Length: 186
Image (cartoon, rainbow, N blue to C red; front, side, top):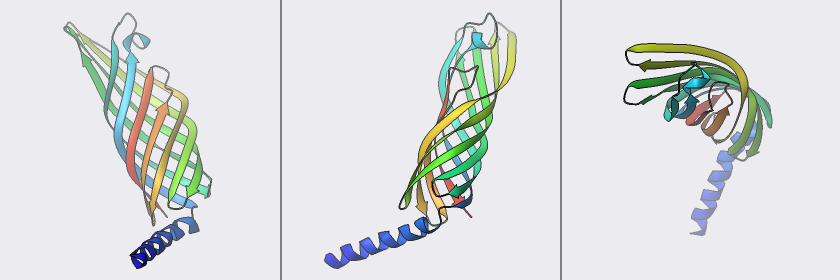
């Protein structure tokens, strides 16, 4: 029994050494998850009184540079999907996609890294309402603040990432995403 525990401890220690050896460099990744959107139609289309509060499948692709073991930068593209709501005589839809850039603070803990990030997002939101045979639509773009927290489980050059991000987009009351993905460090 003692031998098995010693072998297991040596194996875990051996796996964490490559992860600690070089926590700097370029990386790419992709994630999928649940995007949450909350919006009021009157914020975008005048004289409209429709609220949306829903989630959809979202995805993102990103690249970054970890220039110190505790500090890096990251940017990417996010598609938050499309949320819609129906009432007796109308239907509303909101679709948002964005480009983001973050400063990332990293806390390496062996083969697990915890991170927090703060940055900016350029978001493009399309809003469409169909009422009584008529259709109203509008689009809005804005540059706003964004932040997030997460963790990477390092597996050699690959890492499994889980994170939550919040995007403070002007014409939306809430835009956030929880995602799980994979990164590759060069």
